[in-house]
Amino acid sequence: MAAFPSQEMSGAAARDEDGSRTSPGSVDARATDARRLEDLRAECRALRKQLDAAHDGAIFAEALEAVSEAIVIYDADGRLVTCNRNFRELYGYSEEEARPGVHFAELGQIDVARGHVVVGDEYGGGDDYLQRKAEYRRKLEGSFIVELKDGRWLKTTDRPMSGGGFVSVQVDITEIKRNEEVFRKAMEQAEAAARSKSEFLANISHDLRTPLNAILGFSEMVLGEVSGPFENETYRGYLQNIHKGGQLLLSIVNDILDTAKLDSGKYCLRPERFDPIEVTQEVLATFTPIARDKNLRITVTAPPEAVPTVVTDRRALIQVMNNLVSNACKHTDTGGAIDLRWRLTKDRTDGGRLEFSVTDDGAGMPAELVAKIGEPFIADGSATALRGERGTGLGFYICTKLVKLLGGTLSVDSTPGEGTTVAVQWPLQSLDPAPRP
Image 1: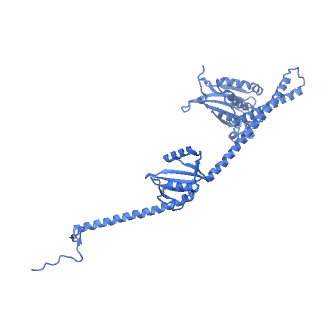
Image 2 (image 1 turned 135 degrees about the horizontal axis):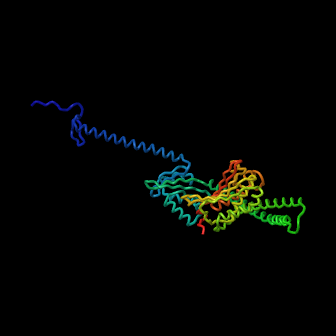
Image 3 (image 1 turned 90 degrees about the horizontal axis):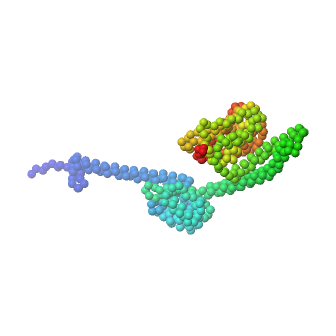
């Protein structure tokens, strides 16, 4: 029988995955090669991910060591995942003690053994501290500041992670707390000095008022010729100067006394209901002599609608109005005009505002002086420094303090040579308005 020629080509015949022989050029062989190629590609991708993860891990580890804070990460079971060198140094842990997998309770035992014991937080120790810490660990919001037995202060900020567990960032803030303590003591000393100053001013003011009232009383009696006619006109001029100087000095003493009360917080408000227009007429009556002497036109302007009665401290409001009108009279030229104006404004946020303003056409003030209004004992920042009678520079300071105490705001608009407008505004709600009966 004739032999058939061999069907094998050069090289071994391909075998399929099940061991059967396939021809290299067959469809099955090409499919097998494709699967093997895809497997190789998958292995390459997996290897690439591992390399990328290793690279990312190296970058994360380097960044973890580079930050200045102490950082530690715990898993959902409270076991350490990783930490940086600053964390180990902050508590004195070795690498073995702060190894991955150690529970934070074990680290707590090490802290107790070494005396790194928390004695409380910034609000105190005891059971309240434990409750505050438990509440913090439950929410993991904000920060928690604790004091250690060795005198250090640590600030801990914990945040939960999406995969469970949490990351804790801890900072030694001992120096900051020491600076806060130094600042607190300095503030206490400054407040004590301020109280002493206010008490001294209050006491000396009371001591000065008694002889001053005697000087004013007797000079008024002599000028009023209570015990008979006073014929020596030269002496009359002297007495008038004594009386005028005494009044100015008494005004200064009263300003100092009011300043001491305001600075010490001893100025007590006594709210009452009253008509602001009637109070304005009372204040205006006290300035009739100076208006007559300087031929000043002083007018009161009120809105067409009735100004409601208000509930506030009547005495404080009168003092503010007196100071503002007095300044306007002092610095308005003879024959000038002063307008006292009440105005109501509507506002959806606070229900409207009540405004009282004093406008004069006097000397006015430059912007640099307006900016200083409200500062105590600064003569060149007070309107009284411009010309005429000089004082302590406390008038506007007292006004600003009283207006703030009454819940209002004070503003000044002035132009040199054109006059000044000082306006005081109060939210109607803060004044407890009510319609007139």
